[in-house]
Image 1 (spheres, rainbow, N blue to C red):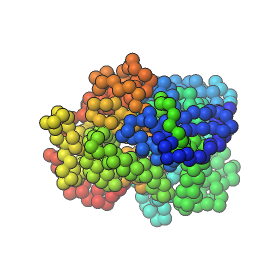
Image 2: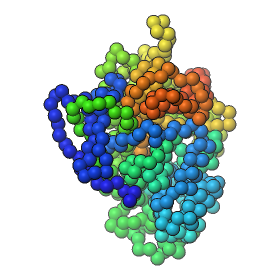
Image 3: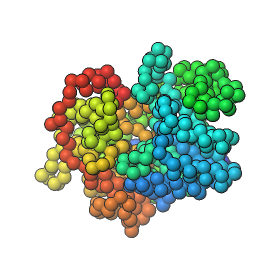
Image 4: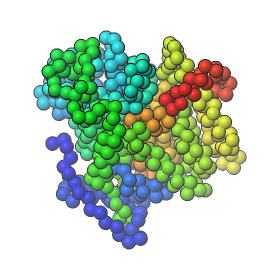
Length: 544
């Protein structure tokens, strides 16, 4: 069975001398392993010790982690995963693009090849049901008709947009009130986490991040369970004929050859905040109990990587990402005079104010930020109001850099060590490409490889914090042996002769180097922001 067997974990607190170790212990079987926080760099040791009490955690062998660097690798890996699926395919994305014939063919071939295979898709309703023949809903109809009992398409709709506004806001703009933003691509016991959607540009010339995890039954089951939970408060996509015969609530509606069916005849889709908040909280608490790491006696160094899933769904009162950020910076601040290096990137850089405050007030942490240039913004060249969005992000960048200057944190070269200190901002620009990467990497210092990375769907802005439903992951890596700083080896992320842990750290360092290859000095200070754009930003507030 793919589902991990249930485990109950011992909860015990030993003497004061035992506080440096986390142990993951399964009483009934499946696995038993210990994680010593002494194997972590001192910069994050206490942070890791506290985090393992707050978030579910999954132990992963670093040999089973692949860091991809290019959109084509993302597509090839995804198609390969679908091609070897036996029991389940589970995908979460914002939408599926209109030209994804390879993806649709791969899903169809897999369903025809494996009679037991089930496919689960969790998508955003507003983005997937835009008017026209090329909508995601219309694209999926042939598959649903051919395999009605084996393909399950759930469409999440944010309850934030309701009442008269829900009727007045045009279809293209209703996503501004919140979307389903989690990006999970899984089959059987393997998972790939990215910020990329399933559209042609994400497979060709839209830079993102992609981490693949092989042979991970418990981690894959968590991701699958998360999507199954989301389906309970999502609409279901059905062909119109089948939808008309399905018992559903009055909130079900029919359009353009398909039915969007609300599964619960009792609840109202605009009034699910409490239901979703309770469901997500209980979900995390259950998985925390199953995977809980406790503070026990120091043991031998462990070279396993630990992954912590983080749900951020501000409109439902779930703020795990904010809690983790506050906890991380609290511990980083206590590490002075050590100077960790934080690399941060977002394709839509309008850093959430509490995160900005943490970065600017933690003077012993140097921070390098990569934002998209206006030309690399996905809205560049769009018609109408959308075309102003890249300029809106320039305004956010200008405000951020003014705050950096006011905090006296502008990046400067230190005569003492020849290294830069403070906060820097560069912009990603590559002809013919757009930029969509997001996340953070933390290194003990400027000459070391990362020991922590945050990856997944969050853009680290107010929209991610308050409107969209996000699923991200924090990966903490033991120190291992620290090789020299990386030389850029291109998008294949290179190889390392060191231990699996050191190789993983080197690959993350090369991931940063690969992204920074296309970064140029920030030019936003010289760019003019028109009054109409300033008005748009004021109206939209946290929607960008």
